[in-house]
Image (tube, rainbow, N blue to C red; front, side, top):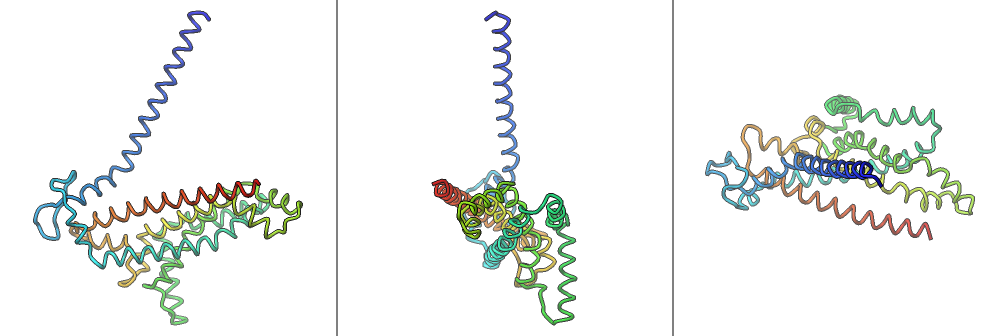
Length: 292
């Protein structure tokens, strides 16, 4: 190897090393940028703040470490958290029940039909939540005028609207997970003697499970974090956690809000990590069984 070739290889090695360092630095910067507000909220929740009553201003980093504000979380706020959890779980279950079969049918559609149906399924994602909320509000008023059924300010009313905006996430995630192999693998299983329901259960659903998990997670987050639809369709007894937070910081900051927000965030991270671990293990077992 000549000296010139050696110098070129050395230069390329240095460039690759510099590129890796630059990408790692950019990743660290991006992670810090994304999590900086969360870190500030969690850190400030441990600050005692000045003795200024309920309008106390919290500092970051904490000047005096305390768990005081965690004990000041009101029962109304816990009720809002519990209501949001129930609503999000119900939304996830309904969106999965509606979206998974729809995705299985969409994955088998012809290319022309697939393009049309997928556009229809994506439509709720393209509508601003404020428009969706107003549309459902007018629809519920019309239903109430005709039937006397009151849906505004009720959990069923919120649930229907949340399922409307969450189901497209399930459909999209499951279709992506299935790809184009589901139909051919099902046909192969049927040709080898499996019944069609068994082929769907043992072949298609294991392929779809990553999409089912991702779609269910999206559906849960869409419901749990929604503000606009919940404000328009909710009521005094159906205040979700985001709406309760907005009410608590309207005008003056309630110092217990960072505390309950920190708890919700930490519990959410732990639950998601646990679900990912359990789902990954189940997918591994299913794959090994199907392969065997």
